[in-house]
Amino acid sequence: MSFNLVDLVKGQLGGPALGQLGALLGEDNNKTEAALGAAIPGLLSGLTSQANGDGGASLFNAVKDQDDSMLDNIGGLLTGGNSSSVMNQGSSMLSSILGNGAAGGLASAVAGLTGIGGKSSSGLMGLLMPIVLGIVKRKVFGGGGFSQNAGGLLSLLNGQKDNVQAAMPSGFQDQLQSSGFMDQISSLGGGAAAAVSGAAGAVGNAAGNVAGAAGNAASNVAGAAGNAASNVAGAASNAAGNTADAAGRAASGGGGLLKKILPIIALAVIGLLGLKMCGGGADVEVPDVSVPSVEVPSVDVGGLNVGDEIGGIFGGATDAISGITDADSATAAVPALEEVTGKVDGLSGIWDKIPEDNRGALSGLVGSNMDKLTPMLDKANEIPGVSDILGPVTGPLLEKLKGFM
Image (cartoon, rainbow, N blue to C red; front, side):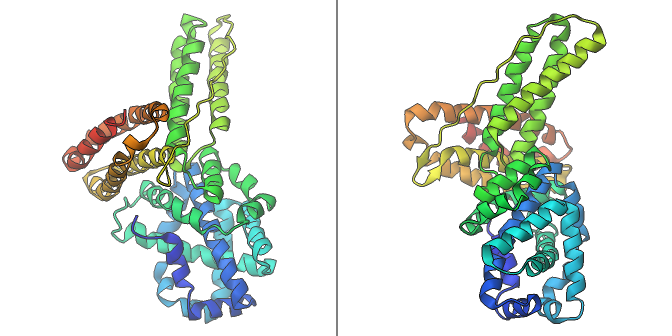
């Protein structure tokens, strides 16, 4: 994307506003600036995690309802009599969205890293919350090429993962871990846990990898369970498909932890089989099913991790297509899909430089993701007027992706 969300937030609080913020918090400028440098990417990582946990619905409502006019007079906000009220409201909103534990852990981590007081850190987070939501609102609703729905919000946030990662100060991940922030965020769901661990280390870089691996693992489990007895084969297949879809959505939204997700898939499918057998009176012994570990090689070519790049390509395409509900939203999705096509062109330029021993595994990763992306695109094209809008972009895109298979 052509903008950096971290820098946009920092820009609102730079120059004279930094001194005003420090005076409001009771901290000197150096500590205030350092606290901002940690608080902004920390807050964005938390919001991204929450959005990936529930599909962006609750955060989208908060963004939509945010009064963004305060961005036009930050100086007045920092020096006016209602600054404390704004802080309190922002803190309440942050706790409502992330939970008290995560909000408190984030403030504690910022204080621990930068040395500002705990009260100052909490106040800073409360003040940042409406500013961040206001900026995001202007991007989503201001003609930035995003769908004006939860899908568009997810596309914006997930597209900023590299910027958030780059802005994370050294040692901040350890502070987030020791403060309990990471554990609290993990409770928001698989997609949330993946997104935060990715942002504190790398927000969602492995999304496409897990989507493909989870789908393959679920299919393997379904097939093994189906061999146990013909009367449960249908149930196994359905359970596997549903579980794979859920895991794929969580992964494409914000990254994934492969070793945690695959056992969950296996347990979910086997559990559903058990319920089916109890209800149907069938006495069927289900064999032990081992889910194979799926390893995608970490291939670095010219400083680019190819596996991560493939994950980002399919994550971006999925985000764009998932938000399409009509012709207008299809038009809004075109810039994001054109951006994805640009990444594919960049990958084409280095594909021949990838060692042959690794190229096969990467081709398999592309293929498994294509199996999930193509039906999603087909469904979108069934909407009246959409295929004429998407065809000129997605047609060449799919052909280029097939070249990697």
